[in-house]
Length: 117
Length: 108
Image (cartoon, rainbow over all chains, first blue to last red; front, side, top):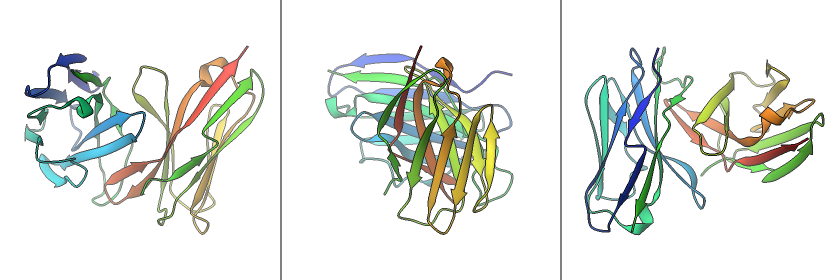
């Protein structure tokens, strides 16, 4: 079975441009998480979905960031406009949560390394 | 506020043991441990669901003290493949808050 798929794997863009990161979770998983990893701040949760519904977006840095999950097999994270401080590795992870309110194993995608010049 | 891990970094010779600690200022209901190799994604190691519970994965085990809000990861007879950054994760309902990370390097 394929793991979590993310695209692109690398993105280099200029400040002010729109960036869209994509994620396909593991089939059958009902929760999806977007993380950002930097040396300074470590691994931060940006937003997560349960059954395609955004549950907690308190980690989204500001209005320039938005995320959608139109169906169970696809999610996007958009940054518009992008800034140099957005440079980081963005991970998507999915999980099969058996019991509401519990935390189960998260399977991470390979990540997207974003560089904003 | 993210859990604090100690030490921040450790270098071992192959075969040596190490302990990584995770301390939370908020209540720990369960603790997750992940390992991330350089340039790769974090990979799940284990979950500890009860206070005092110990679990094992290969020669890696962990304990969880709910009262002290702490967890420790024990690496026994380390192997080169153990190198990477280890993260604990504090569970809060449906989500994880990852710790500050511990970089582990195992030398031949």
